Image (tube, rainbow over all chains, first blue to last red; front, side):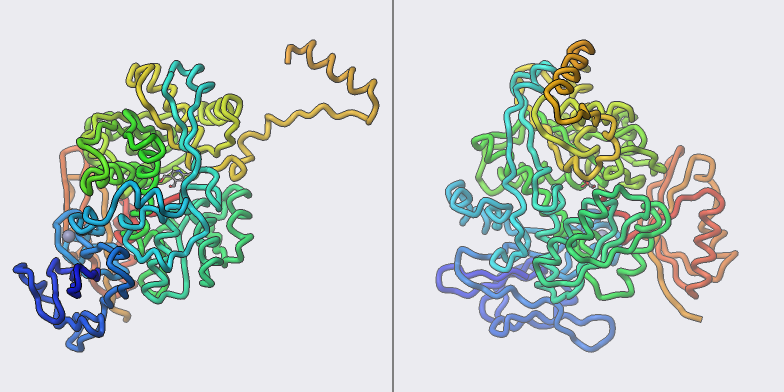
Length: 481
Length: 82
Ligand SMILES: Cc1ncc(COP(=O)(O)O)c(C=O)c1O
Ligand SMILES: [Zn+2]
């Protein structure tokens, strides 16, 4: 339930899409049947919950000023459009479809502006008007506003004159997951949770543990027991309880769904999912702003669940919706996956709009989701935007990592290697033209997957004498290096 | 007996699309099957449903469905990341 001040009138926007003034309903929309009573002075909305005893489930956000409103109407089912109050819920009770945040875009359009964003902090919170939480209480370790760099060297190699890299590997816990978790953690605190949790193949665990530390929350993160050391240490340092599950990622996933049903914990990617996913939008918003308020013509995005790709485009779309940009959005969206786990790419290329689950076997572990829930939405986004999908052969993942490091000085993890190699493939296929404004999203840091590039290490080991140094140097030039 | 409910998604490979698996599940095990959403085509299909019954019975039913080649995923958790 959102809450706003317009003029001097106290207004509340209810999750049932009604607008209330004082205790009176002033819009003509029907109330949702479950809404019992609204008490605007107390800032409470009463819904019955399982059984006859009415229970408060949707406290209004406390209002702090006319321009600091959370513009959330409620949650809405992506499949059947049923509406729900703002609760830690991610699945529609009726059709079990995924829930998504619904915003009052007209109200947002009235306050948002390029200037207001430019005056904001150099973090994701500059886009607070388009986020479903109260930014004033943000759990903030300064996620976002990462570099967007023009990639002249890589562009030269690939044959692109207008290539940019969004280097999101330099977020505080070293992946774009800080964006989503910052939003989810903030909402978890608003809901009154004391434990932040997730199922993860690594990057998410790092981001959850870091944000929980900052928020003073307990954290419990679940990972498959065979993860890369960089990800396990990168999470462990923040002091979470790490549960290493002897099994595949699918089994971790299954276990966590069961735990989420039985424990009152905020699982960022289960019961906090609708809020969490919104954080990904900021990657799109930021790129458009950093390009001088322009949309790219092409965006190459790594895909695991498909949420990131879908939400980057949603971010672009919302910029038009609230009047920050002129529409329509011209950006073609491209999914990048590795062959060892490419259910989204395969479905798209086969012209299917149904994703066939696979058993992942890929070097790109952070993208290894065999049954991507947002896969179908990613496919629709690609079709709608005129984009395409590309699966990179497994042995080209590390090549992509090395190419990026050697040309642009950016050390990315396997997911970034997938993106660079997919970009190369798309250019070779003629999908992206030389002059066209292209952004490749580099979302994770190479220090987390060092194992796969250990072969780059061959130092000249010498005794501390000039003689041995020069000998070694000659050896190098003889070898043509 | 601990009665419970579980939301699951079954994904059927081509050779099982035409089999009455959900019917069999309800017959072989003491669980009520309640279908909420589905998309079944010639070459593949999925069904999102709720299973209700004794927890152990539900688990045995799910194990059986998995053992004949249907992929079973939790609904609440089918959206997890990496
Ligand atoms: C580094 C990195 N990039 C991209 C992704 C893809 O995100 P999504 O699951 O939203 O598709 C993930 C995680 O899943 C990741 O860890
Ligand atoms: Zn629904």
